[in-house]
Image (spheres, rainbow, N blue to C red):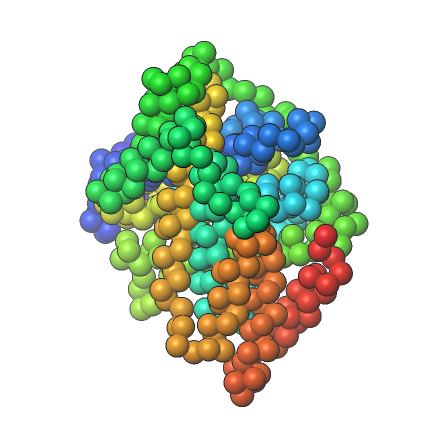
Length: 446
């Protein structure tokens, strides 16, 4: 069996081994395992106290959907595309799904899942037709980088708000919360621990930070002890298939056009960027080209469809896969190991009860820090570029909307470029998006 695995994944050719790939897969899993508990917390809006229970997604069903979607995407990526890249529901897009679409726009989660499903179908079509390259080339790199950075600021703000570190204030809109409250103190403790772990380059720093914070919370009575650690796999029935049932709702709501477009754009570039970054770190780029790139993108696209059918927001390639690459991962077998570990994680649902806002908020804040790193690659010396990039970034946390940030940036890009006399550098698709987002902000957004 080991010999067949070795031959299929070309261990000898890539200078790796069964043991090395297994360790890499475990490392990647630990680096991204936090999503198992953060995703159910975000999608169920568990930290929003005044949200009607009847409108919430079932937290345990989301946990199962997250595990299965990650397992499906990671295993298929490993076997079919043979890349050391793991997949799971993406940070940022889950926040957009929960806080913007469901909470902000008032769109039922079932319809939002249908929007994710439709975006996945679009992704599959573009992967098959080759239109993907045209869209990638149409949107300037600065706006792509700004979208990632803006989402980072947004996620950090969500973490600060949910934890009580930042609170609303009628005079100044926001203010510093009461830092002597137990839950807030636990969040700060968790943030300090996570920062220390990440600064020490601990591969599973975010995940371990959550574990330590939860344990500390239970020791000091801030978090209730779980009834058990291991238990039966919860039912996925509350969310399974809801996306398919509500596809007609997507086409009956003007708001859903912008929602689907946001799901599509963010995942589109996130998947592409992650693929290139991980492959480059693993030394898999040949003559600046990626072998089997089409297969990898197709896996990412089908994972969106499968994940939404199961009951979770957009499933995408994870940059945390670089942790596994750093541990020696060079083949798809490491992704298969990661996927199998996500299946094993299905039996740890009872631990969901200890994952409170004080536990997830440090993870959100630190992940935001990691996402903002791309801001340094934007050419801020060019004013015509700096304006749309800045507006994209700043509008996301200030309007509490990822979609609004993207819309504002895409509207100002052609304006600033035309004013700078650089009309020839504007792709025709950008003019189309200018009109689309202008209509969205003017007529379709509530």
